[in-house]
Length: 213
Image: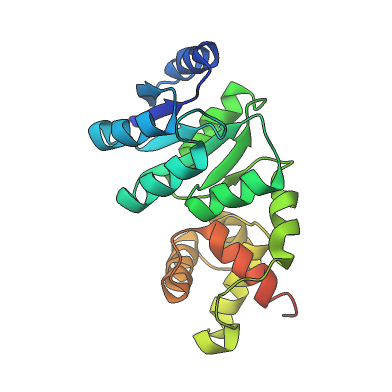
């Protein structure tokens, strides 16, 4: 299956170079390019890509605003922020806006291709220098209900703790001696109960509310 990509970046040379590199991957198809957030929103509607590679600082409409607008209108499109900036504010705002991943432009092309595939499957992708910054933000007040109000089962709490540790479904399955399919079902149940769309948000919630478990 081909993964349809939209690349959004205000630097033409970087954008075109990245498109050429990713085009070498047999399962990736760059269907469009945009130089600002406004164009990205329009092309998202027109092209309906599977994954968007989104820069942060751009003219007319920045990546955070574009991410929020696209996520609200087309929640099934996966957005991966790809930028040179690793400031906490950009990371946090991008994830809150609906981005499912955040990587730096220094990420090697093969790793980026792997991240795109992982993101396409619905899993979050945070660069090695990004993840610690996300965890550091967890001291900020969050408006989610406490864990007791959700009436989680013991197994669901175990799944949440594993998510907070950043483990994949396969790693959780090995740790809890379950099948991967069972873990996937539990993760879906937990996300539905929390009213969240992805593992990143659930992991953030679990880090704050289940850290004494």
